[in-house]
Image 1 (cartoon, one colour):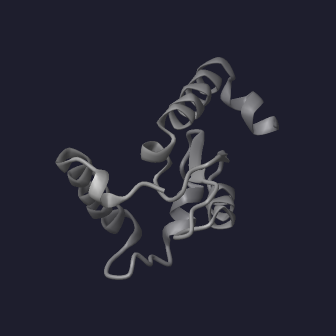
Image 2 (cartoon, one colour):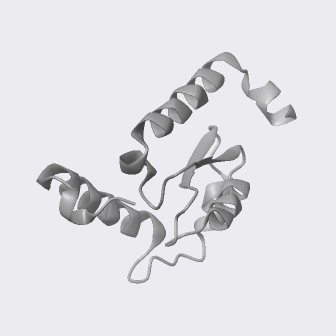
Length: 115
């Protein structure tokens, strides 16, 4: 887990902006939107959900529920990462994203749905 005191001003700004976006997408004030799961089911592109193995804020089990809500969602847990795997394990995070994009490009949508 990375200490916020170690983050640069730019990294803190990205975190702030990400939270603002999340509030818009997931609802205010408590980030609860009863329609969110239904909306996620209408996403028609492959969705990769990355979750830190040691996330104590939102557990990987929660991530699995989110992945199931997407029409074509997949959860990938990042080892040795907490709530911010992109900062705590950037190599593993970007490798997962690269693999997901490669699969999305090389595997037709019909074949993905059959999996």
